[in-house]
Length: 269
Image (cartoon, rainbow, N blue to C red; front, side, top):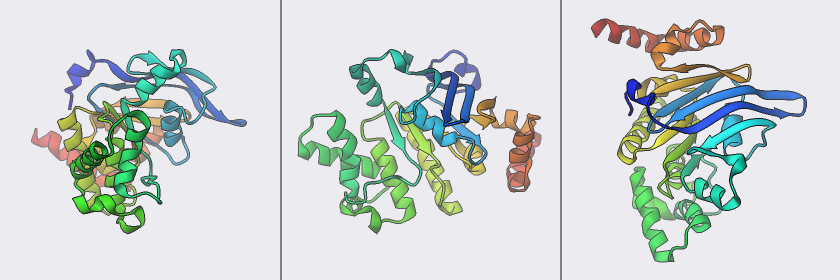
């Protein structure tokens, strides 16, 4: 992960400026600005219904924006040709909330979906690459021929992550990756994300509500409220922030153990 001082001199893999997104008369994003720096894990938080997942889907082009600029890898998506957009799409992977695996396909076939869409490979090579990705996320080889209905919740998460890594992306979007997992499973998945980020040099944009994940693996945190990013910085920055929602989120009852741990670490340091 990047040291804080280094991030000031690196490129923004994701750059969003003055983004406006709405559904009917309801505005979800009201002039939102956001930067995600190369090589970092950014945790994106916000209250329920505030639009965390909507932002991800808007960046991916799945939800239309009303105005604003979205840049990926330094390219304004509005100015890109279809071929340029396809080239950009090959550079990122997405793990949707709940996994979003195709129920009628095996794990191996799910992982191969991005390969079939973007690459021209022989069936044998696709099989080999899919198995590599499956093993990379900690699944046994025999999981390759199982259907999603035969997997546990944790295995579904790992299979979805393997699919997100199918094209060796530079950037990975993770939508609530630890939701539905027990504390042990969530901690193991956090460790997997951190290991893959360091090993593969990934940039990770992670929508989450999991305070433990924010503490364990995020370089920075960006918080969404009232349609805008109200704060972006380290966990320590979040703990010092005065915004009412941030204080409720980071100093509430569920946050006590993390705040206590942070304070103890500062005293010990």
